[in-house]
Every structure is written in structure tokens, then in C-alpha cells.
Length: 65
Image 1 (spheres, rainbow, N blue to C red):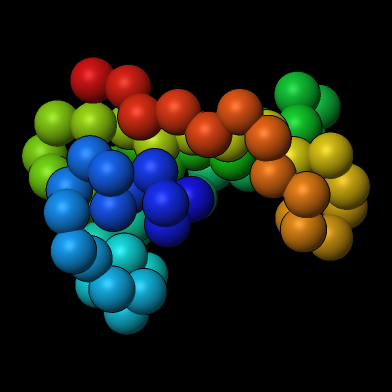
Image 2 (image 1 turned 120 degrees about the horizontal axis):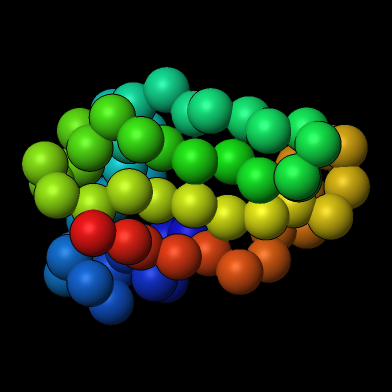
């Protein structure tokens, strides 16, 4: 996620991202994770899919809003 966030928001560090993303909504049935609280910038929703139960293989990260 970091390369995409840096591309959109410029120089952000890992601690800032952790602090501002809010709580994730995990949908096991669809294999997606969404950050819906809009705490990062009050506009965008962050979403990605995962391919394993350990959440290590992330695909299709999107910034919507």
C-alpha cells in the first residue's frame, strides 16, 4: 500500500499511515479489506483484496472517493 499512498499523498511515513487509516472492515467472504472511516483525508476509502489467510499477499489496492 505504501507506494500507492506515497504516489497520491507525497512523503508519508508508516507511522502516519497506521495512525490515520482507522479500523479496517474485513470481509472474509469476498476476501477484501476496506478502510471506510475516511480518517486519512476525509474523502477517500481504501480497499484491497487478499489472497491468503495471513494477509500477506495483497492485490488490487484502490483509493476510491
